[in-house]
Amino acid sequence: MSICIILMACTGFICAFFPQKNLFGFWPSYLVYTISRFILACSTRGIAVTGFVLGNDIKKNAIKII
Image (cartoon, rainbow, N blue to C red; front, side, top):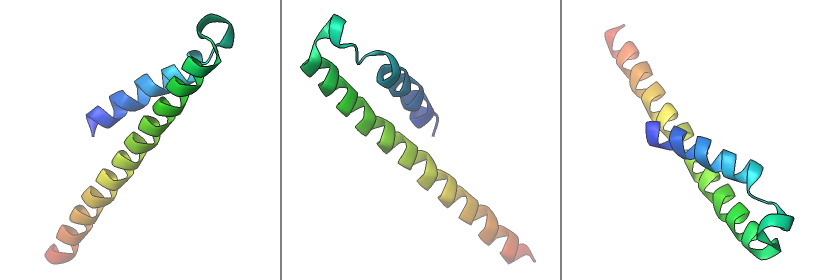
């Protein structure tokens, strides 16, 4: 889960500051932006699934105790 948070921080920074057509050109900016948005989506999904599984485990254990 911590890897996903680090990936989110890095790719979010790249998505915000890399697409500069004057410095890098259009196609390199577009490619890096697209790839980093994909990685950002995957890491966000990874955190959501991990949180869902951990939440269900805690909930199931609480139901078993009660």
